Image 1 (cartoon, rainbow, N blue to C red):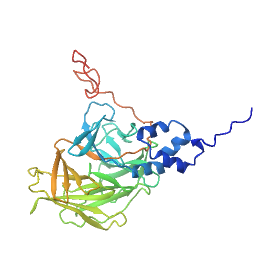
Image 2 (image 1 turned 60 degrees about the horizontal axis):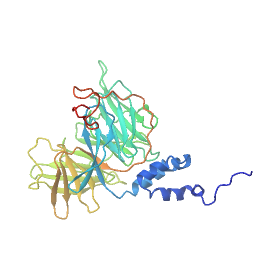
Image 3 (image 1 turned 180 degrees about the vertical axis):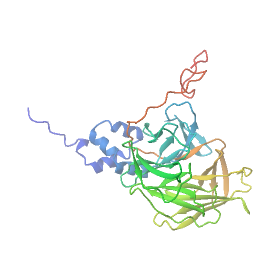
Image 4 (image 1 turned 135 degrees about the horizontal axis):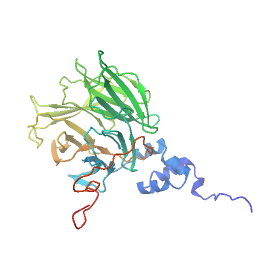
Length: 381
């Protein structure tokens, strides 16, 4: 019997580029099934080129928020979604005691004894050590993607105190794919512990008070080098100023209370880091935005195709601003927003270097969070 000849009409004879054009139009469930068909298909569907192409063609816009719980269950995406006004919200169940970080739809969740990295779309979850014993209040973390290789990295800056010496700031990087930490050269200046960070176009940015004013410190994740950028041209940058990623631009949000209760959002040019432009100047007075709070921190989330801005404050309140009518709509009073919810098919390594903790035991439950287990007729789980 002669050798088997591949059917010339088979889909396997198609070149990779044509297969990509077919796959990119499939729904998510079909793509995940297609990964199991062959090594070739999996290689195509997990390639940086295909992942980037799929993200660029997204049509629906959602927002991801957190259901904060310390039950020690593994972080996961909850089923279903909720409408807050006209915005669709999906929720992650996790311990949000420490600041969460996101990049391209992936969520980095620091916990006491390790770092979780979750891809909500593929349900993949990796867990990694800090390289030290456990979480420290001296940490300042960052999470982002190397725009050249497509790999995701966690950056840790830690202040090390040595007896009879000035404190030293050590900087290290974790490659999420390999689970390996390595050291970087120290940053040009100290970053305050717990400082918020954001990733934009392959760099992680921190906003920090360095004594003579506020500065932005960027770290290029591919070159793994710090560099300088010009600070936004405003005179009143304070602790209430927030840094964020708004539509793939580095954004600075400033709240003014005197002489006018207003919000300004500045965005940095993608090509020229010395150039800033004011994107929004929003008067907050008389528009349903509470002002009688000691510390007001506002962060933009997303901009709709119509140019309407979704933003939230540090008290779980969600708003939407309509520039054409200069109106603000109050969407929710109890939504802990993380970021826009982007479909990301980037694979995560399934091997983790530390185990997950046992679920927390309670007097009412033998094991786990009531969110996942329904009580029986006797009221027990």
